[in-house]
Length: 204
Image (tube, rainbow, N blue to C red; front, side, top):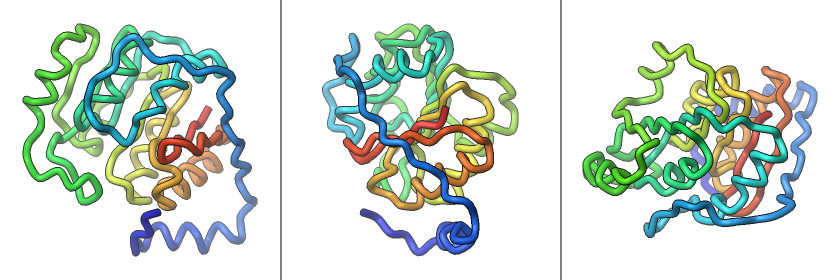
């Protein structure tokens, strides 16, 4: 578990004491199945791909458009492209303090995903992207730098621009879980949490 000494996170924790507690509903998949597309690369997302079909069915998610913030090496992107007609992956491809990636991995990731015609990679940070995109998506995946402030900013936009928003690392980063909880409180969306594979928060 990672406990960053982040002001925004601890402020949320303290102010949350006086607010109604957000129910976190355990997400227990009814079945698991591998997607048709999987990359042979190490990923902290490994295992989550097996619940995507169940998640889409359970929450009646349409499968036209998917947006992903945080592509990294493309493991989750490939899995998502098995179910959605179009997947847009947004990333700086330079890592952050939590991923510890030091090199530029853009071209490597482009090459790795090039055989999947329904994936479009966009080199951008989430801040610039959400300034100009007013689209609606069926599902948005948020897996960016795991601070409270960034997760909340990107996640709130995502929750308001999608039927379902999912957030990786709710179990390994308390700041992510706190942000998802606060977004749930603000938007009125239900907060489901899958505790395996470092955790996956689901707002729907």
